[in-house]
Every structure is written in C-alpha cells, then in structure tokens.
Length: 173
Picture 1 (cartoon, rainbow, N blue to C red):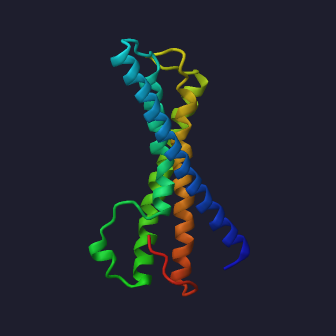
Picture 2: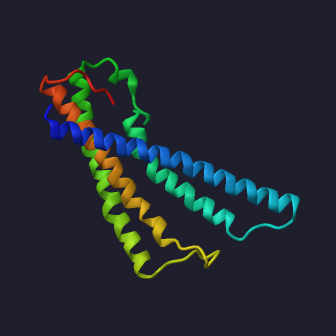
C-alpha cells in the first residue's frame, strides 16, 4: 500500500474515531443539561427556558457525528446470515455495491444539508422557543456528518478494492 494512501486511511479513521468521541461528550453534556432541568423543575419549581432546546440540538449533533464512527467500528445493522458465508472477495463485492448506496445517501445529506444550513445561515435562524439560541450553526452538522460518513465509506471502499485486487487480507465491514 502506498504511503499516501496509508496516511489517508489512518487520517480518515482517526477522524471517525474523533467524531465518535465527540458524540460521547455531547451525550454527557445533554444528559447533564437535562438532569439540571429536571432538578430545577421538580425540586425547585424553577424550570429553565433553554435546557430542552439545547439538549435537543446536542442530540442532533450526536446523530450527525456518530455515523462515521459506527461505520468505522462496523456497528451498522447488516444481514450477516448471508454475508458471513461469503468469501473475503465476495464480501468485498457486496461492500462495493453497498458503497454506491452509501454515496447516494451521503451525497443527498451533503447537497440538501448544505442548502438547509446555508438558508438558515443567511437568515440567521434562531429557535422559535427561545430567541437567544441560534439554530443555524447546528444545521451545519448535517452536511458535515454526511461528509464524515462518506470519507469513512471511501476508506472502507479502498480497503475492499485492495482485497479484490489480492493485495490485502479481508477488511470486513
């Protein structure tokens, strides 16, 4: 494997790992915010005006940033009954076909997610429930999440191509 290709694969997988770790911290932040809200609401009768909205936005980021990590860790749902019985090259062919659908999905996230974000950015959209909370920066997570998944899918594709060319042992997804 060429050094440039190897560096690209290492970079993409590190980026996917980083996005998964970021999602873990976002989960912790959202849970802490909701805990504060519950304590304030039910023990002090002093609910916040921001906790629900901010936790919802954080969970949105969580969903956007976990796709690439899940793809790297092979955590997406698959039909292993058939897949597991295939040879390494057979699995690589199935993964190659799957990449076509992954690319279409990610392309849709990139194109329409960017339009969604850009319109919101141009209009400086804020939350309807709390005008102090900007929404437009959070919408950037949609195309960013699509790009992260596409990069990890491309890294997996390159590994599968190496299997098909007989240059590497199996890289199952």
